[in-house]
Length: 286
Length: 271
Image (cartoon, rainbow over all chains, first blue to last red; front, side):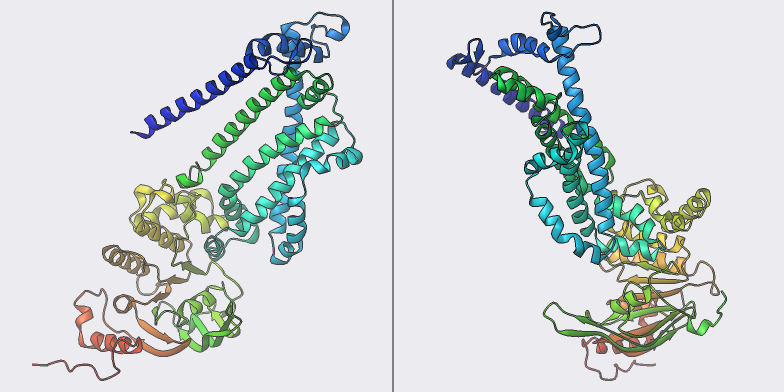
């Protein structure tokens, strides 16, 4: 079978698995019709999720754009629900993207700086191990007290979570750059700075790719964790709010959205980095 | 060049290098080596593995400081690697993230040679090593022999006065090895006998040393134990290697490597 035929078959397998899972969920909703509260099924079937549940998300629309909010006395509408999902998603993504950029950049720069000399690496080796094993979510309350529950606090938390991973990944990747490339560059006349720019940075990229994908997963977790505690918007905020009223279907709907977003971001970064890695052997790109 | 002391392009004076092995034991890799190499000389360093020949090369390259002693190139004591001494490594050193031509340009780019000029130089040397057709390829698309050609083109394009090659062809097949030997000699002789670069070539292959060298330095257990002049004219052919003086040198080398008892070579029958 050709590679293309293989890929096509694999795709069909993925689709089949996806559809089966959806069917199992639907089956469970029929077999287990218990309700947490009147009108609130423990397991909401798809027909509920895409009608009542989605519509109920209009409750979180804060008004504007000529679409009045439920709090202002308007009825729930699909438009308001859509805008609500959109605006809260954008809030969450904004925090993620800024946190990811800041954390990734600071982590990378610090990692490269620490790798500059053997003694700096020694100096940071132990604190690094310590930071890496510290559970991220344990730091949420601390960050709230340090930076507040608003935008800055949330972004700082995400940046911290990602920064630690990228920092550790960078130090490790630089350590694993084959000495022969460094020797070759130096004997061709590269200065220390040129060496970093033209050899170390590209050489660590294959290893950094998995670090980036890893930190992306942690980033989604971190932004949600930050929003659980005190945010006034975002997908995490909706989950917490829905939990207080036992709106299980809304929580499930947001969880599905989350799966969708993480999958798309993962796929996009994976594709983008594969393109940047066209020089590498296939085993480092897949 | 300002220091036209051509009899001493590379000079090692009482050079020592010791290592500490993982088990804590000290190993004397290079012991009291003193030698002067003339400008334009093609010198092969021969010896059994672990004899210190690669260590000598790395020290001259500046990648490894000597434990004691002095190393001077063109009259200046060396401090770290520099572009006056180009190195072709035993393992693949071509940067996989740069296309072939960008690899060849690397050294020129490091010292800000204008783009058009460095591209022209790189193109020239790629042609010389027979790789003009893969200038835009990624290194992963090339064979081992082609990668060695890229490495050779890179150091020649960089214009180093001294070239060091560390068993560059040892992993290649017989045919490729011989092709690359002649590519190397062509490049070495490109400027005529007055503009030849000084070459240090590490090998464990006796025939390779005989085919390439003006002079063969034999190492054993970290010491320089013999210094043989190879006077056969160039270009050398398979027949050159059968000339009596070449056979005599070969016997000496084999004896040094412990492959022959150090007796007098067989008398060549003369009619």
